[in-house]
Amino acid sequence: MSTAHSVPRMAPEGKVRWRIVGLIFLVYVLMFVDRINISIAAKHIIPEYGLTDLEFGSIFSAFVLGYALAQIPGGWLGDRFGPRRVMTWAIVWWSTFTAITALAGDLAAMLPFGVVASFAIVRALIGLGEAAAPPSGNRMIANWAAAQERGLATGVTLSGSALGAALTPPLIVWVMVTWGWREAFYVSGAAGVLVALIWYRLTADTPAEHPAVSREERAYIAGDEVPEESTAARRATPWRRLFARRDLWYLTGAYAVLGYNAYFYFAWFYLYLVNERGFSLERGGFYTMAPFLTMAVAGPIGGWLSDRLCQRYGRRGGRCGLGFTSMLLTGVFVYFGAATEQAVAAVVLLSLSTGTLLLGAAAFWATTIDVAQEHAGTVSGLMNMGGNLGGTLSPSLTPYLAEQHSWQAALYVMAALNLIGAVLWLGIHPERQLEPESASSLPMDNAQGEKT
Image 1: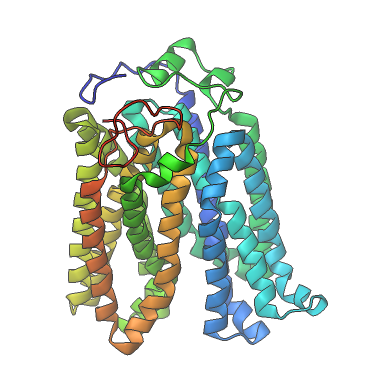
Image 2: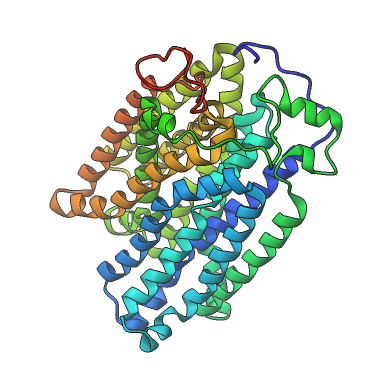
């Protein structure tokens, strides 16, 4: 195995691995369009069915909860059956139920429960499908990205999520104005089926199974890491060692803080700008795009930076150093964004906070690959479950704190959580690989189930 400070090999001429990364990027754009479209359509859904804001909030939470709880099973499926097939079926599944969202209110009349439950069930089923996408995408990166390119690859794909979040409001509004709110879900669902076909046609689980990959590119991807694995030779998941690793729980906790931050912007940033900062509806909608565009730019930069830092300082310095610094800066920007009395300055500072947040996001996902390349789907599923449980808490706790105290106090709490997330990075060890269950003859450090 190569040392942390080894000089990376010269990249070959073949670029198939980056086409795979580009396809994961496309899937993530679609995933966030289908995740956020209901928030835009809420303007028509709420009055049509006579729903309250609280009832509609429960519909949104149903998605997040289903999405969070299915992360580990979704990641395990990608590890066990291959990310190509699992991702394909996941896209088809959630795209089907995205289209059915248009009918959810009308289906309630034929079912033994009300409109809210009907929408909630459909959204939860979308969440179950989308849950397989990030860990399967991460497993695909584990198979396809060279060790010195993992951060950049994960950063590029994560920027697809941010771009999807930024594009959804104008795209869905245009479709609703042109055709109607139900048609927005039909269009999204049809686009998903098309993306699933493209994904299945152009990807393969490993470079060895892709006919367009040259021998040189395969060798470059494999490097000095664990030899490339065929789909028929996957090891059993080391569940006991996985759950015994304390630092994976630290990673999950830190990612819960990231999720708490992100879902504030998904759920409440627009209303915060309009109701608290006094922006008009139009200006508020325009400025709402700023945090997501900042995320889209920062993701690849953070991934590239993490790779460069790993080459210079080793994996712990490259992943944990960037993760710690990014969350520390995020907390600082959130604090001053909440404290400033200038509305535009608040937008700038809070948008900078999402930039620093995404600057370290690739370090999270790359760490799951560094720790357990053969089980990157399962490990990243655990981490992303934490992120979305934090995301489940944020949409409810933020308005509660704002109502009981102030919006400023709610953001101060978010700033403090980022400081906790930064501290958690100090206990994470990307350089220590997860050992198989059978590898019990070597000494373990700190009772974490890791080879010293």
